[in-house]
Image (tube, rainbow, N blue to C red; front, side, top):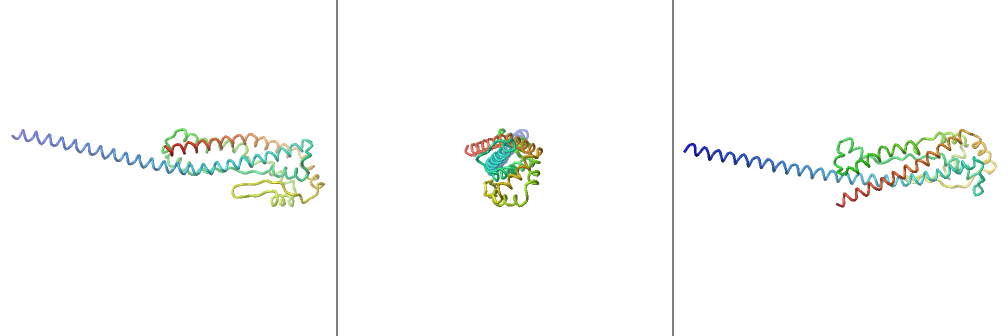
Amino acid sequence: MEQNKSGKYFKYAIGEIILVVIGILIALQINNWNEKRKEQEKGQVYLERLKENLILDLEHLELNINFYKQVFEYGNLALAYSDGDTIESKNNWEILVAFFHASQIWPLILTSSTYEELKSSGELSLLQSVDLRNSLSYFYGGGLERYNHTVGIYPPYRKMVRGLIPTKIQNYMWDHCHVTRNDAQILKACDSFISEEECKHILDGLINNSILIEELRYFMSGIKVGLDTITEQLKLCQLMLDEINTIQNN
């Protein structure tokens, strides 16, 4: 009898152990499911924040492209004049403004706060798309570095030409030929307040400065390459936005 009761107790104990193990496994599974759900929700929050950052970046890239296209046009007008080309459609004042506007720069500052937070916290894996992670890495890394080494440089021409154009003329140009509106710089034509002869005298000093012209030519070359870089960044930004929208809609 004792042996028979012991057998029943043994079977009962085994059953209890199995039930406990099953309960632990179920609890672990539920915990894993909850953790995965929390990670997915956290990942969605990060995706939305990245989307907001990239929308701002897209706007800044578009403004940056339009700005440097203007600077490039002004710079090439100044170079054409320095090369002795006849520019019938422009008077001396307009060419002097071109020399000034060719020195304008607009550093591109991307909104990388969310990406940097993901990197520093080691949570990039919350973005399940490997393509998106790679694109973000290039966009805020190598792509931005290419920009900084081309159109993003601080050109010596800027300092040189502003040291040669009289202060009163530069002050007038800032007040009448340049507008800052929100995040945008607007370069525009403006009426002259000095004579064509005075303009010609200043222009002669500029074009006879061979180092100045060399620096202007170098800066325009950088802008030419840099515009391609900004355009590539713009396309990549749009692709990432499209991918995020696809992920969010699935």
